[in-house]
Amino acid sequence: MIFAIILFVLTYVLMIALPKYRPYVAIASAVIFVVTGMLPLGKILPSIDFNVLLMIAGTMGLVALVIESGMPALLSDLILEKVPNVKWAIVILSLFAGLISAFVDNVATVLMIASVALAAAKRLNISPVRMIIAIAVSSNLQGAATLVGDTTAILLGSYAGLSFNDFFVYLHRPCMFFITEIGALVSALILLWLFRKEHGVIEAGRRTVVEDKVPTILLLLAVLLLIAASFIPGKPSVTNGVICTVLMVIGVVRYAVKNRSVSAMLKPLKQIDFETIGLLAGLFVVIGGITEQGVIDALAGLFTRLGNGSPFLIYTIIVWGSVLISAFIDNIPYVATMLPVTRGIALAMGMNPTALFFGLLVGATLGGNLTPIGASANITGIGILRKEGYEVKNRDFLGIGVPFTLAAVIPAYILVWLLFGHIAG
Image (cartoon, rainbow, N blue to C red; front, side, top):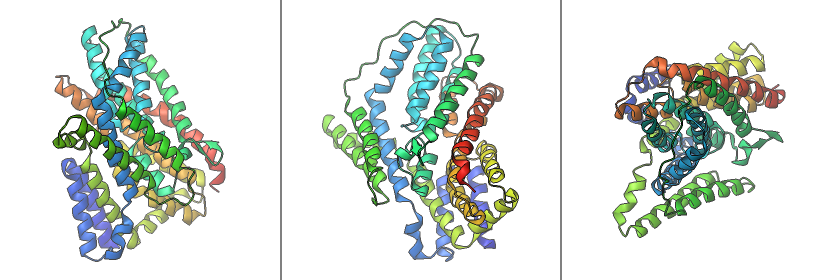
């Protein structure tokens, strides 16, 4: 166990110190776990959650096709035509970005909506910095709303056996979608206050023309099929992943036929984040290794002692601890590691893990908004601004990120416990 702990800690340290090489670090660590025998060969494949990997790949491929079609840009144009001034443009675009990111990858959402914000800022001759920060944090917030909203939600859904519908209603109670939307409304009030002095009028520009609606239909079909699959008892564990991947393949093949070029298939496929897929595959093996060596049980025991036998206290520790940790550490490896730990805590305390699972998702997903490096959506937004020649200072980000995060996390923290805390004990 000691060597497994050392290797696990070293893996995390290197992933933090070498962010560009995180997938390689995770895969190298996985190889060491296997070569040293800490994870038997027969347990390698069972340790890897192929449903998660297929869902990520399929959803990203579909999103790439939707972006290419221009449909999100058209929707953004329609919104800008209806808003009275900059203040409302920022708030509505942020809410719109959040709504899209409930079904589309957060980074892709930022890439789509940021272009609209940049165009609006240029028309008004104002800095787009705070606008794009607001869009990024809003995108990150809504990733917890649905099964396909963010990698963290996909991880939880697959690990806990949650269906697409379970994110809307679970145990006959409103679940993460509604909890997240309440947080979004509260945080929207914060944005209204933060941008209260922005009264510039936006002039309508030329609407984006969408000539191909099929990618959007395929994405909507994926959502409908995921909903339908929720009602199938005893379905294979990779069902959701297969749905997303098959529809992505259909879209990619059609794209190649439409462009009369086999090589055209590479364009949407290049938008799939294979580094994240490699990172997760490596982490699944690493987590399988530390589980085999008893490290997960030891961590669960540590948290249980910190909780002092109180379900509410351990829930609070998980939520706010995740907020702080995710502000500095990528939430994907963190959630992948903490899911089995959270289940272990629940087993050790003899409690139902539901509230702890949702608390982990709330803290880890929303906590990334505290800092510029806490979430991929934030890093993407800042990268876009830098390419445009704008400097993003820490105070620019923190001035929006901190109040936004608190406004979103506090209602979610309270609601998850009120709705599911009664079954914890």
